[in-house]
Image 1: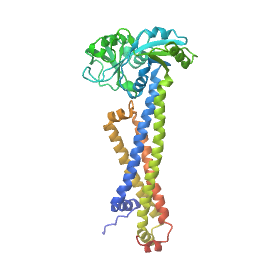
Image 2: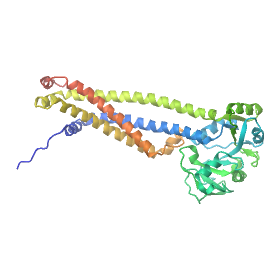
Image 3: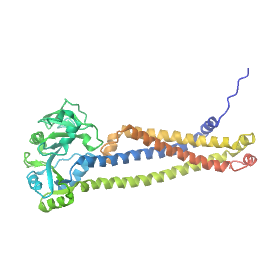
Image 4: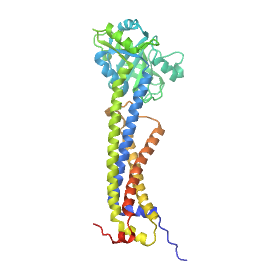
Length: 411
């Protein structure tokens, strides 16, 4: 028996056509590659920035924050980008601020930056809180770690953020002082993931060391200094009015009170600016890439008019020609888009820390579903660009009569 000939379908013919035009196919796939990769990367960066601002605002937990005015920008940057900071002022201000009308709770915090690993186990930000007055960190730690729900943190104990490479029960060394890791928090995709939390008694002990004293402490007394005052205002009281009262009282002092909204406004404005820039850039890129793919693909198809004319003359319906052209555009969009998304994801994963440092993003979103949804969206955009090119090419080819298509010569 004679072998049955394999029937050629629209997809197999389309793949053969693409492989036969290797250079042009590669150029069109490269355009879809760049389109998908750039939209995927910008979407991840923007969403991570927005989530970082949102999570930080939710975690801040204070209505008004008092810090040295010369370090306000530094503190704001530490909230969102995780930059390490150390600054101090006289703790006697705590009692005066607590007496301001409208203040319900006032609690101090201490910031100690390890800066590098020469003095400590790892370079990170240490945040100390006063267990007697704290209303922000202590409830968070207790709600996240059952082991601390009753007793709280003791002297020489620390809780590390989800991004710190330390396990519960291990020991960290900060400025020559050993700290036992009492627990580890889950990741929050904020700068707190790279922080260590300790009690005030432990922080005072660290500040007594000579190395810590050199870190902006100077001649100040380590037993009395604080870095910030976190304030919760009474119900129904406007935080801005409380901040103004504190600033009026401390007008000629080095400290200044900021509402939580004003403290995060710089980061919010930066995210909004980046978002607007990203949208404009992505729209321009989409238009440019789609136009280039359409032009190259249409020119290629027009040059193949005689080929399609022969197929139509031999009895192939126009719908078959349409399926071939659509299959080619679909393949270009799929292959270029998939490779672009995979490459962008791989680069972001390989250079995660460098990207975070350069952009100021506290942490990338860790939800796998978000990445899958973003990848599908970018792939659909790439495929849409390829199909748009196919539609333009179809309009350029299928309006002519078969005999006229055969008679046409390539320019």
